[in-house]
Image 1 (cartoon, rainbow, N blue to C red):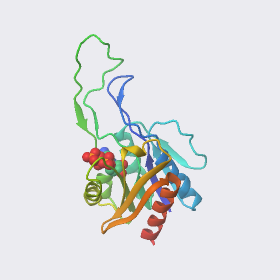
Image 2: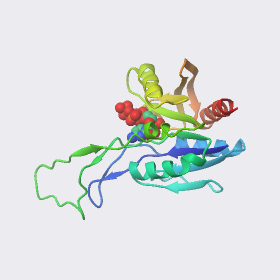
Image 3: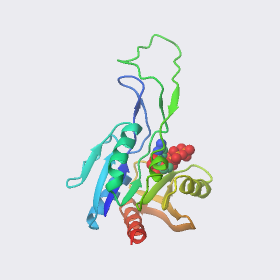
Image 4: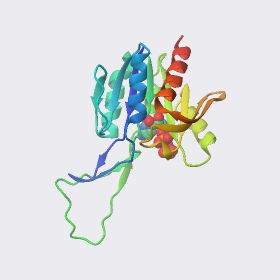
Length: 206
Ligand code: CTP
C-alpha cells in the first residue's frame, strides 16, 4: 500500500525569528514510516521541522506550517491507500507576520491568532476508499474526546494518547474505531504501536 504519514510539529511564525509550536519531535510518524516500509508498504512522510535523522529510502516532504502540510496532504492523498496523521498540527497561526525581527520597544505586545485549517477533516470529504487514521492528544475526558474526533473527522481509527507521548520512545495509547476501543496499550514502544496501527490498516483495506 501507498501510505501517507504526517509527523512532527508545525511552526507558525509571527516574525522572522519567532514562532508558535509544540514539543512534538516526529518520533511517532517516523516510527510509522519505518515500520510501514519494513512490512512491505510504500510510505511517504510529510514532516514538520525536527532533529530526527531522515530515513533513507523513504519519500520525505519537508514542510514548516500547517497550511504547507495541508498542501502536501492534498497533493499526495489521491494516490494513497491510507493517510495516518500523527503530526501535532498548530490549530492557530498569527494573523500578521512581521517582516524582520520585532524589536523590544514596547512593554506589552498583542498577537492575534486565526484558525488553521483542520487538515484531516477537510481531506476526509475527498475520501474514495482510503483508510483514515488520526491521533487524539487529550488531557481530559480521554475516550469521549477521542471518539468525538473520530466521528467529526470521519476516521476509520483514532489513536488516543497524552502529552506525555511528546519525545518519548514508549507511550500509553488506545485505538478506537466507530464501535469502541479495539486495543489498549501500557508503556508500548512507538515501533510496536506502529505495527499494531499498520496491521489494522492492512485488515481494513482487504
Ligand atoms: N489535525 C489536523 N489538522 C489540524 C489539527 C489536527 O489534521 N488543524 C489532526 C491531527 O494530526 C490528529 C487529529 O487531527 O490526527 C486530532 O488532533 P488533536 O490535536 O488531538 O485535536 P484537534 O482536532 O486539534 O482538536 P483540539 O485541539 O480541540 O483537541
